[in-house]
Image 1 (cartoon, helix red, strand yellow):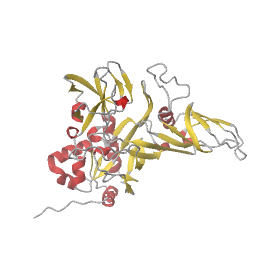
Image 2 (cartoon, rainbow, N blue to C red):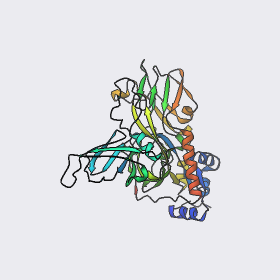
Image 3 (cartoon, one colour):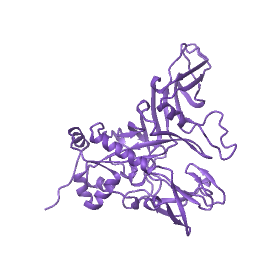
Image 4 (cartoon, one colour):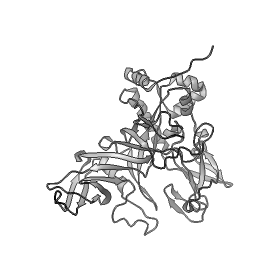
Amino acid sequence: MAKSTIKKSIEEINRKIKDGKVIVVTADEMVEIVRKNGPRNAAAEVDVVTTGTFSPMCSSGAFINFGQGKKPIKANQVTVNDVPAYAGLAAVDIFIGAAEPVEDDPLNKVHPGQFKYGGGHVIHDLVSGKKVKIKGKSYTTDCYPSKEIRKQIRLKDLPYAVLVNPRNACQNYNCAVNMTDKTKYTYMGVLKPKAGNINYATSGQLSPLLNDPYYKTIGMGTRIFLGGAQGYIAWDGTQHNPAAKRRSNGVPIEAAGTLMVMGNLKEMDPRWLVGVSMLGYGCSLAVGIGIPIPILDEEIALYTGVSDEEIYTQIIDYGADYPKGDTKSLGEVNYAELKSGSIIFNGQETQTVPISSYSRAREIATILKEWIHSGKFLLGQPQRPITSI
């Protein structure tokens, strides 16, 4: 007798969540379940797999309305804690980007620059409950007569504050090495000369898009863990590249999909939105993201059972090749090897260094698992799939 096909719906899983009958596991737990029982039995047993990532994500920022003063202003130049914000929106609406440095930062004039404070730090200060100083200037209009506004304000007092990150949760990424004889300072961290270290990103088998490589359950409206609160996927992320090269298991072997995400900044936690200073490179924001993957069928169960040994990435020279626009691979390596702490590269043992936190990623997946188990978090029904191949 043929085995019955396993099919579930998001509505069915949400009913289980409400009834307290849902079975949720983290992505690293699912690896063992699929390995031991196979994808079909795993699909029958498990309803949701939770994922997580915590890493610097430069393409992040917040839309803020900081409110009018006694006389209204159409601010066209605005700083928050002396960090320039984009004011070309309307009146007192601004966007502050995570990678924007403070006005008087020496940048890389004294190399390597320290980039001690920027937009990511402003966002962290806001969610920490600290006061920030806002300064705005205007050319004035008949309906907006004020030339200047100055105020100190906390996040809770802002009329509006929404985190909107144009490119987060990258689906796989390069490993970075430096083949030159000088230290290099990059967005992948500090790279020692002559391949003295290899830096890598993403949380491997816990990483959200590596558990749904063809974006079958993820789209606009998917509810996610974002910065310690509930957020949403808004659209494909910038630099979304679903046509990237893949292995037979569907997992890309290079940078592929990305997500645009958003959520209420006032609900977020400073533990999961942390300002970052990257020596010699710039400012950023470390963002915590977790996505629940509904196990709708055996195929999705198989994808969520992917292990670090099955996820490969490319080693790229960020010392000479990458600055020239040349991203030829110097070798391929899987995440189990990278997480071991060292690999053999060019005939020598080379230290591997993560710029993402695997322990924080596991914590996010565990928190999301608990939210779903307790009925605090229902799955969102995607209204539009993100672009697939």
